[in-house]
Image (cartoon, rainbow, N blue to C red; front, side, top):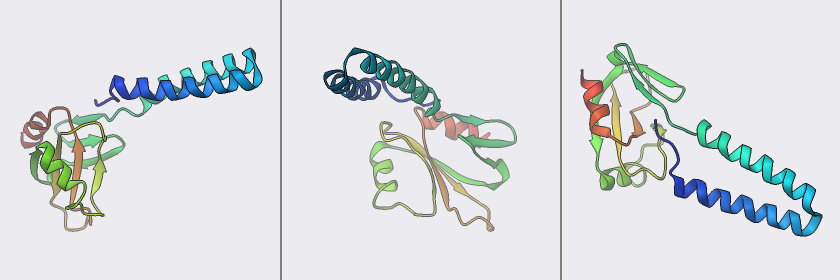
Length: 138
């Protein structure tokens, strides 16, 4: 499971607090308190809802809501940060499935072996891409 790092959550919370301060200055205490509570709850919900969940079992690979059976998986590679940078920018294929988070610098590239699918590969952000590669090779 890949969640947003605390520095990103703190930055977003700082932006929310700036908004609350502006509302307080313009409208007073009650609206500012209400917005503060709503934005704080929203940030907690966003933190948990934006997590990227990667699961591998004996039948399939599931990344978020997407899933693919093992028989359609071709070569699987763990990418270094420099390889990931090229794969998601200059060398990107527009028809690829991307499950990436901008704050993570490592990923796995899962090539597909299905002639009926126009998706050439899945690019999956992972904290430990070597572990994902091993799980998919077994």
